[in-house]
Length: 465
Ligand code: HEM
Image 1 (tube, rainbow, N blue to C red):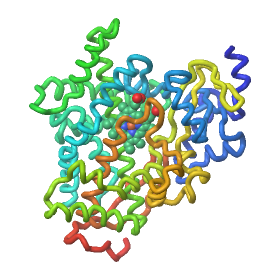
Image 2: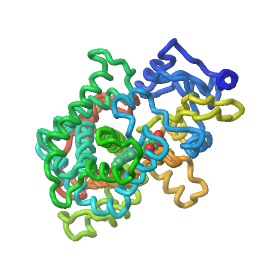
Image 3: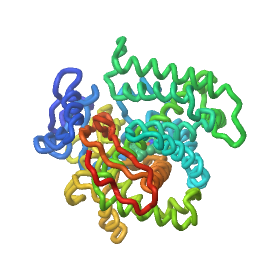
Image 4: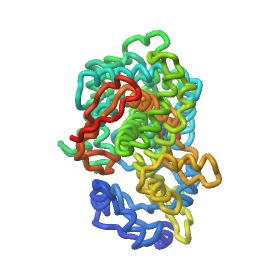
């Protein structure tokens, strides 16, 4: 029973009434060296109970436990994101649905992100990347956070709605509201005027209203994307009992917002941190530049466009991306909820209890990663030489819900890095503080003093700011 099994929860602390240890966790993640998890592990062990984001939970920090839990999605666990997630995005995003509804949405999303589709998207993504870099020509200092946020937004917007949401006032309005929406996702779900949660709900309503008035009501240009209409059509065909048109509309709205969220902040954050790390490691930048200059040189002219095969040849770039994801781990916690009493390491995760998978802890575990705080893309080369030594890498999750957008994200980040290192040289303006809540961020957004490459062999600036 619930009462007897809760007796078998692992040791831990439940903190203050209602909010539990949420503020302590957030405070720690808002520093450059979050120690909340490490300190709890020392005190209570690798699996401990806590109260985070308003819910009693068991926190798992070891790779094997996390992989085991993720593999049991839909069997002993279901997705268990905080209330604020459902409130802001709606309960029909892939991340929030379970059972047949989730399978149907998953099928649709995975199909849209298959290699054949990605292959045909290379040039559209490259157009948007080039648009971003063209705008750097008139700037001496660029703020990488702003640039990557708007680039990643434009890429996912193009993927979902094609050219109808291309840059312009509608794009700006939706994007600005989308940032407000994201701020409310992990806020306490308090609907009082002025709270982040309330502002996020208002932003949600405005986004839907704008999209439906300015985008969806306009005819779809030939060969253009319309994820919205296609998703509706797909769901209609699935013929779920009791699916009224109103319900279908709400489901589609929620799915669209979920896709925008899933495909935007994480990718933007990875681009931002990749730029930070490569700027701090000239040896990595040199090898990265060499890889991309080789790709460019093989095209017999710098104006030639990238192809899927070029992407497949960006081997070192993939190590840089994976290492950036390992070190920064954009999604630090994955949330599940037990649907029955689940015995785990001599304890019981009782039915209804949340389980938080601490991915960051896995990626910083010295048992798997030597010098885990060091940025070292070459460490992933060794794994290829000996796959048996492959350490756990969970930045894209695992089990049935493994991120379906992983290749899409790697593609867009690779194209971004290609044009960055072949077109620009830069110098880092120092003074940024790193913190990690809700996603990894930099206090000043990473400012670069940029200079267009005159010839590919130019070296970095000599002067320091
Ligand atoms: C570097 C970029 C990205 C990272 C680090 C990332 C990370 C993740 C993680 C950890 C999950 C699993 C969540 C869970 O199990 O609870 C996930 C799920 C998901 N991601 Fe990504 N993601 C990225 C990019 C993308 C992109 C570009 C898209 C879309 C184009 C996308 C779409 C999704 C969707 C729809 C899900 C839900 C899957 C499901 O519940 O079945 N992601 N992502």
